[in-house]
Image 1: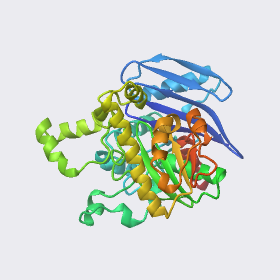
Image 2: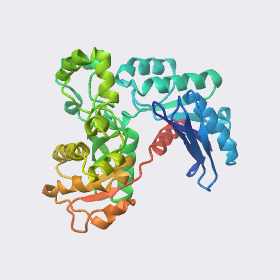
Image 3: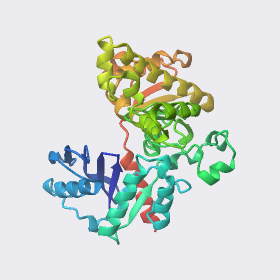
Image 4: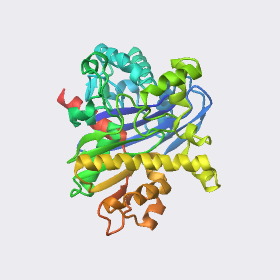
Length: 392
């Protein structure tokens, strides 16, 4: 039996799931820590209902890991880090390294090299991997890169219109991200609707992306060289004409200031002027706030545009699958998207859509099925780790 701890790290957030893997996969514990670096909260729970939660002040992700390991004992899951078979990471950007790999100095060097393309993610993972290695040098660490699922995207959709050698020299090409989520949707849809060979996966949340899936494989994705691109995000810009950068740099005092504004003051926050949380924006729009309404309309329109592109690549669509925090919980966004997909024959069941429950929400006579699914990124990372461990 394998015991694998999966870590999912954000700039100020920490999530984990602990699995045992033998003849079957079993979730033993899961938890999270919010607002790392300031006053935050933690919550640890087990499938049997055991919980431990409270306020905390974790200075680092390593502190959050130690807190959760101690909290697990309170829920009768007494696991020590040194006794694990592996720690797996939902790693973001490995450049030329893709798939699941044991963490080595060479892998860390490549992640460091790609940090400028994933500045909010790679440094966090690098610090955690180095911290664990210093405390438990014999513990196997495995990085499962978010770019992996998109290795099947045709080359003509992965290149930019730049000198081709820049892709090799500087790593400037479309990689795509959220691979763990989109691969889960591909797997789940094969279980639920095996007849749906052409699926558009729509992961909407604090960070959002979309993926065209043909027979279980990624053939197009909205994100490019960095997770900042594609759909706009909670406070990140998404796609932007690169020649806007000199204008912003001059206006804001330099390129670092421009990049900081595009990654921290843009997206939902910048467009709405209300919040980076869609729930707040929807309330403001209902109260008559024009900028909030524009932000929702622009977001839905952005999604529809990618669906149009992806159905062209797929030669049609058998199903659309919404996931992520917004995809799971915003009936309004789903309704707006569906209302603009009459050309595909998409029709929602209004009562099912309004219920925000998992499952099929399309009307019986909808030409393409519409699903709402809760993603499970950590499960897919665990499977990548288990496959690697068993192969060794």
